[in-house]
Amino acid sequence: MKPTGRTFIISGGCSGLGLATARDLHQAGAYVALLDVNADAGKTVIQQFGDQRVKFFQTDVSETSSLEAAVNSTVEWIRQTASALVGVVAAAGVGLPAKIYDARTESPVPISTIDFVLNINLRGTLDLIRLAVPHMVKNDPLTEDGERGVIIMVSSSAAFDGQPGQVAYAASKGAVASLTLPLARDLARYGIRAVTIAPSLFDSAMTRQLPEKARKSLERAMEFPVRAGNPEEFSSLVMQSVTNSMLNGTVLRLDGAMRMPSKM
Ligand SMILES: NC(=O)c1ccc[n+]([C@@H]2O[C@H](COP(=O)([O-])OP(=O)(O)OC[C@H]3O[C@@H](n4cnc5c(N)ncnc54)[C@H](O)[C@@H]3O)[C@@H](O)[C@H]2O)c1
Image (cartoon, protein in one colour):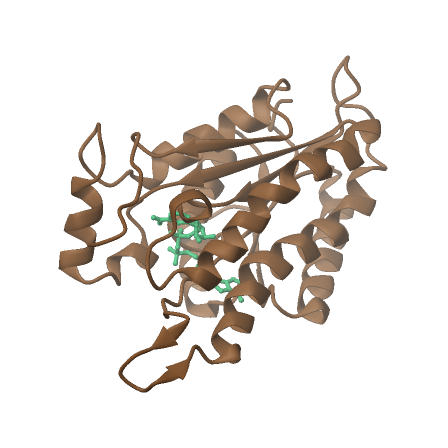
């Protein structure tokens, strides 16, 4: 499916992997609706893009009412642009490291920590998809195959080899990986594909928060190339996932053959 002249919703679209994706899609002539909780970043990004093919909707993906408002506003926008909603890239995500039991305080991880991570990474992903799909199934077929759209989700190496302190994050990203095939099966009759990308260490605001020691240790675990990925390498796989109709129901590791070690 070609992205040109068509609309994509990108959650977490104002930073890191989501922003690189928004840039590539926009560069390819697509309309991009950026859903992000960070209003300041949204303002800056809108100025940088500087044309009518981008919109920012301040959104908390963990709140259904907020997502509903953003999807409805996007649908209102595409009525004006006559550019069908053909894609969702669910890139909003957070990591909040915490071991299941804290030896120092002799207490378990607060349930609020688990809820926070699952509500954004898992519930927020499914909720956005759930709200976007009813609009996408009504698209006229875009290709000879009858394709109507694509949903791209973001998992993580933590889905497969989560480190100490990653139980909540790994649970959220493992679930995103697991739901990819049933989502593709649910949507096959409408010609809508589902693809999940599972990055290892990529340079972004999220990973810049890592302590230097942890970041270096992860970089050393890369087989080749021995460095963090850059956001453009992520977005280039998103572009391939949009344009290559045979990519469906699969989880693509994008990780330089890295397997995360147990110890830093
Ligand atoms: N960078 C990596 O190494 C890496 C590796 C594996 C997976 N990921 C995943 O990639 C995705 C993008 O992460 P990134 O590295 O670009 O991080 P990032 O922090 O640069 O970007 C995440 C974006 O999500 C937004 N966001 C956070 N909570 C939100 C909420 N409740 N509602 C709406 N927006 C919200 C943030 O404001 C930010 O703009 C995440 O799902 C992350 O888990 C990243």
